Image (cartoon, rainbow, N blue to C red; front, side, top):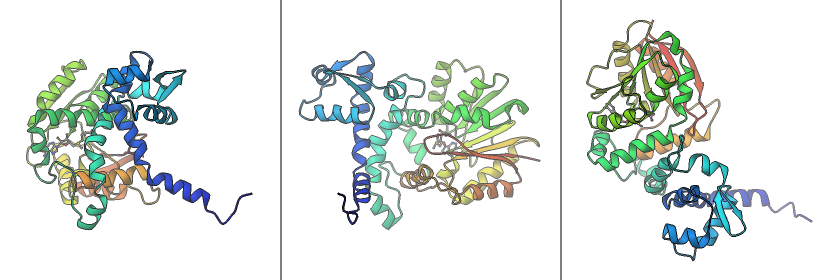
Length: 341
Ligand SMILES: C[S@@+](CC[C@H](N)C(=O)[O-])C[C@H]1O[C@@H](n2cnc3c(N)ncnc32)[C@H](O)[C@@H]1O
């Protein structure tokens, strides 16, 4: 008999939410130890896993059991193999590899979220690297940190490119530039899906070598061009379409307005601006977007913003907003397309 006065569901549900970070840490450690890469070579038992990954035996059995319970490993007798989701996106080199984003969460974001209460009290970002003006320039001074950040962008936003290739009426246009387009991962997806387009990335000069290396490896060096500059001061390049993805959220509202006005000046009539971010919508609250907003607030001091606010900034800059839709991405990105009349 169940005593109805005992709130089983709430105690268990909230008790598990209380320690949900433990599940994240199991995933983080499995990627950090390269367990999924090892098992991509073939199934292995605990002794082999311990030896090949240099792990102590004490915690290992329960660590492996937890990965089975999470649906990331399969156990047959004494051996473990990658389950389908792990084989699909947690093995290095897979097309939608999530490991670089998992590593970023493990090495950087996890500690930062540990200071949320402090941030709620003082309002300040908590990333280990200093935020604020010049933050990206400082990050790129360290080539290893730069590569790490750009790989995280590729990994965390890999689902944007294929959907952006469908969310914009690309047949109307001949060229595009992804402003703040990192090492070209989104630009590459759009260019690959639409062979009639030539494209480019406008980025801080330090990103150039990473862009050159990345687009050459993708075989797109003849279709994608790097434009170096600072999007607040350098004139934006001429193109039919300018993209701002996960860029406006790093800045204050008046700087977002300025960027959209600069885009308007750079485009010819009929040209389009495309903005995507983890935009918020109070009529259809979405946990992933709100968590994304808090994540940005903790990293840079920026935040996400309402879809309606972005529409307002675009219209104030002179654009006619033609379409808006939510994408199927980790952070539930929302994309708005505006046209210069
Ligand atoms: C959060 S990342 C977004 C990357 C990519 N658009 C995506 O969605 O994955 C923001 C990008 O803006 C670039 N950026 C920041 N400040 C810039 C500036 N003043 N001029 C040009 N690019 C800048 C950074 O280098 C970084 O690659």
